[in-house]
View (tube, rainbow, N blue to C red):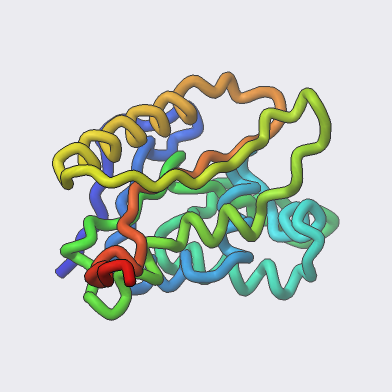
Length: 196
């Protein structure tokens, strides 16, 4: 049975640094763009359903449903209850700063592409165009032929870069995203036909 792997250290907010998503319920919870947006907003700190709905521009009922899916999956947790005008307001926080997808060999073959490309699809969904000279937003796609060992080395370097991107964040300023991947194009398995 899959288990949730956590680093033993906790961040200042009490959440874990890394959380490896491993159960079908957790993978299902991450399969929805609204739930990714909720997790993204919770990077800024705990929030109530009303605060999430306001900042994400969505109905409270919709956000409430998605918050409960994330909570049942163990990706967010209730961190505070406050009585506001006779109603109990609940505030939720992420259980980790980073969510990592499981290794490919632990994912059913029929789900590998969908799960493996989930972060890329989410980045496309939430990215906005660069807004001027001061905006460092950018994207690129590069393809190169190389041995698998070299591709693995680049994958390890991307992981180090991602760790620096998130660890070096001072917690102030604007929110930026980083999406990266080393992948084999879906056409690369096909034999090349000789030129005519």
